[in-house]
Image: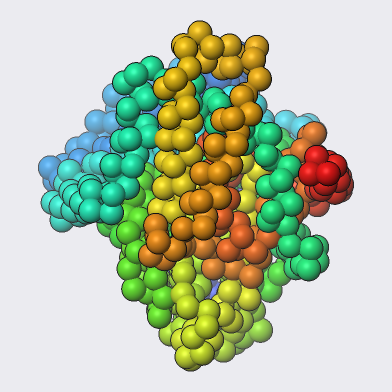
Length: 597
């Protein structure tokens, strides 16, 4: 009888546990806080089905089928069916139908194919663990690079599906989508960026020269790669200012904001699947904190376009309360990225779409965050804002906003931004109170860029600079026979020196006239930008000034997109911490000096 009571207690819902324990009854559970959204019956059934899917030990040849087909399918329907069921007011009927038609046969087949039965009985589970310690739940194996790409694709697909469904059932959100697209088209037309892109991209595309132009520009950039390091490296900055150890820890929080699938793509060691069963558990495991330290989850896809997915967690090791913001993983996120026109923001100018996103995050969770920082337990803790890609840019602007408006007066506020696009500019000669606050915010912010990642260089100025260089290459190739271009494309003929000189001259002229071409050139608002440059399979951390980094061109190469992935940032920071980073930047410096001589 005692055994049955314990088994029932363990498997009971939180309400039953709280009624049995007066202490738990008086303490609100993180799972039932108002900030965490309540799941519908259909979603509860599907989530239970996903947990059951991973309870069984399957033969090894069935693991890929479970991991890449069945589980992604269940996750897809977890995103799609609950909103539809609520829309037609048939949540109970839909939950019963899914349970009988889909999950019932799935559980039956799992029992047939399983090599071991699930350990639902506490006594049997304890006995098996004592006699066979290795016989635990199935383990999740670190994915290969290809599998990581597949996971990233699935994660974006599910998020985009939820976003699309949210727009279809929410006319207000759909209207914002159309407004964003209209604003973007109007901006590129009025600013002239659209005409420049058409001249540099569409014209050579229609004449069959675009790939040749891109390859030649890439070859020229590779020849000048060593000089780029000399150009941006600030020798006055020490290695300690880059805070690589804490940056590596905060990158894990930034990755976790993308959700379980992105966490799985970044894991480097085998783990029990139960560690990744829910968002809260996966975040806690990846960030090396306790599940109860995840205080706030705003994780649902398909919501308001102006509310970025985020969560709040406590990192006791670094005495920090962490606000982690998700990057672009949806249609709404991509539309926000496109709103690159500048607007007035905190006594400066900012990327309009990301500025609106920063305001949206604070409006959504700012009050909760301010109250949390006022608690006695966290009075000596820092508030750390972090994010990757769009999340990194939003983190930078929210960080500036907090300082300028003095929203967190009693705690130090820090920012660690990974792959942030240039988002802000202001008059550094202005001695007003607001501009002094901006300068103070920048001294407490660090940006990180991985090798050839293109996103941290995406701004109106860099797009125009790229258009100028592409147009210069195309003007030269207009007078070159196609078979000669083919020889250069395949590397059988060297890049003509005349073309190299033309590109160098065009770049120099653009930089000299940059103020005339762009009203306000955006930068990453940080005290230092750490460029994690890879050379000969070795990483080196190169400290750079934000304004100098903003002067670099987009590096046209095959890994300009893959270098942007969160797991790539984690691997680079881990390599730097493990001491595998060599003196690659020093070697580049010496090579560049010799070449200049």
